[in-house]
Length: 73
Image 1 (tube, rainbow, N blue to C red):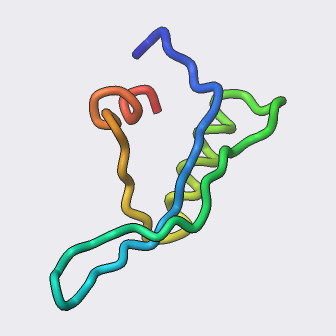
Image 2 (cartoon, rainbow, N blue to C red):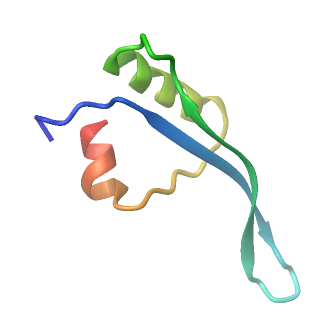
């Protein structure tokens, strides 16, 4: 992780919808976006990401996030 550098962060937001009759859940996508601007450095990208997570009661989902993504962040 020491040699990696964050150059982009993308976020997909979705509603988790539960069917009360079956108990099954599905997602309704609300947005997919990448944060930051071309002149932002790594620390500003990461600060913006954590600020977004702190702004709402989000549930963080990631593919391989606990082994890689969050370690780098």
